[in-house]
Structure formats: C-alpha cells, structure tokens
Length: 73
Length: 140
Image 1 (spheres, rainbow over the protein chains, first blue to last red):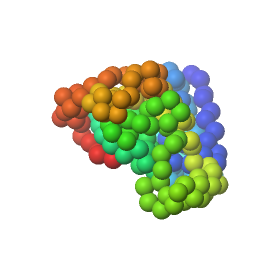
Image 2: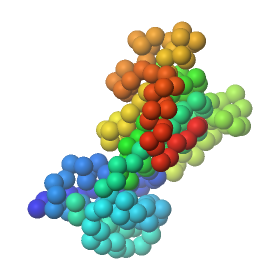
Image 3: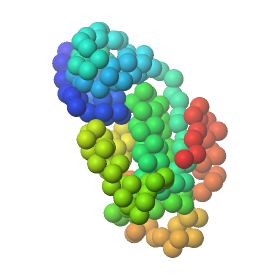
Image 4: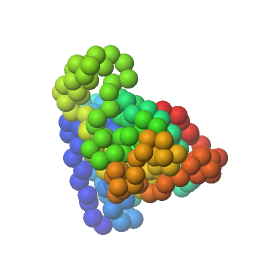
C-alpha cells in the first residue's frame, strides 16, 4: 500500500479539492492519500468530498490554517 | 458511487463569471460528479486562442482599472489562474462543448479555438440531452 503526499499549503479554493481528487484518481485501492494545507474552508470541504466519493476518512488533524487530512482510497 | 452530473451554460465572457463556472465545475468533479460546460456567446470567446484571461470584470471594470485591481488582490490571495483551472478541469475529465451557432454568428472557426480543450461542437439539443440527466444545471 503506497502513501501519497499532497502539499497544497498556500493554495486557495478550489485547488486543495482538485489536487486531492487528482491524487485519489492516481492512487490504487487501499492507498493512503495525505493532504497538507492551510486554506480553512478546505479543511471542512475535503471530508465532505471524501464522503461524497464514498472513501474512508482516516483523520483530520491540526488547526484551520494548518491541517493534515488522511484518506484511504 | 452515484454517477451525477453538473451542466453549466457559460454565456458570459466576464472574467469573474468564467472563474465562477470553472470553480463550480472543478468542485463538482472533485466531489465525484461529471461536469460539462457549454460555451456560448461571450463565453465562447474565452475559448479563442489567447482569450481565456481576456474577459472584462462584470462590474466596476472601469476601462481595465477595476480588473487590474482585482487581479492584484487575487494574486495576493494566491488564486489559481483560469488557465490552471481549465487544465485541472480537463485532467479530471470535464467536458467543454462549443456552441456552433455562436461560431457562425461571430465568424469564429475551429482553427480560432483552443481545440485541445473542446470535446464536442454542438447546439441546444446536446445541452438538453445532458441537462435532463443533471442534478445541477447553471446558467452563468
């Protein structure tokens, strides 16, 4: 199982969502995608997208302006 | 996963409205939907070679001064360029349809357009075919 890191620090809407989606498309089932970012809205929106994509949210950590989200494809 | 679709008519060529269309469309794709943008009238002009970033601001354009000011603010906020949003939209499987009637009215040929972005050339029938199966449709 690979672990894929996505750094969207400093990026604003909709780039964190888009980069998350690009990474998930490239990931194999079971791979973990870790997204690191600083855009506050994305911290709420990425878990919404994970739910809509019916994937597993492994964790949301950190402050609204410095967060890490882990997703299993 | 449910396959759902967002269909957007981009009638405006205003910079801020092109941003709205591409941001919504990218959001839809990121959240697992399909997305199509039908470019018509002034929106089609943004598909012309070198035209994507050329639109005026829909309000307070002030002969370009307003657009320049907004661009500065967007740069400071690190907002992605329209070129980047379009490339992301295409990479995530988004579809662009160019309106053939507009091309005829405005004398725009296929050679004038960014062919690598355009999936189909069509008319109202193609829009209705996609929109009737869409859970989100917007006119921008």
